[in-house]
Image (cartoon, rainbow, N blue to C red; front, side):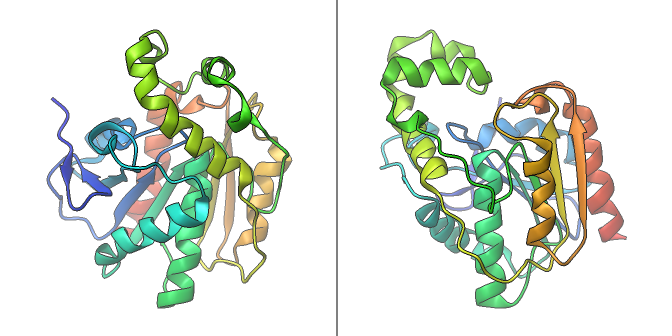
Length: 252
């Protein structure tokens, strides 16, 4: 049974903390929830502490108002994570979560003068690369169609009308946040950025993924995998190994 133990309203951890120096913070995609990252925590439970963010409007927070801007999400995520920032943190974000992780890292550097040890940006174009997207303006059927095309939401939810009504407001708010986000130019991050992308992802071109290199002075890597927007499902072990190898090297 999945354990959704809460540090606060925002932070979930699924396993007891191992003796690791670095904590990996996971930022879900639009429409996603903390439990999406349970397999990551399960695979790393003996080596690295993993926590995941739970945004308002889903699962145990479904009665709360979803947030519809990246700025709101970043401000509240930063405040929730502040108590963990006395130890090294690494960030992993997928899709919208990558943009959110970037913005929280910016707030860390601006407010505290510290940065994540690594930012893993998965399935998302660089913040400076804008596309005009209007999925959040579609009717409910159109929004569901987008989810089915990307295969990012559990198909059980897409076929259950009652569950779908419960989660669509949060999904729409997430898409609104992601699609109305505009990068505000500023100093580059000091932490390394590792970008991950699917070779056939309709949401991210290789050039847009490569552009993450423009947002850091701390080193950059790009890893591409066969698959679409949710290549993570097909390459879970490879991605987990990549994260583990990077962070365990820092812990030595």
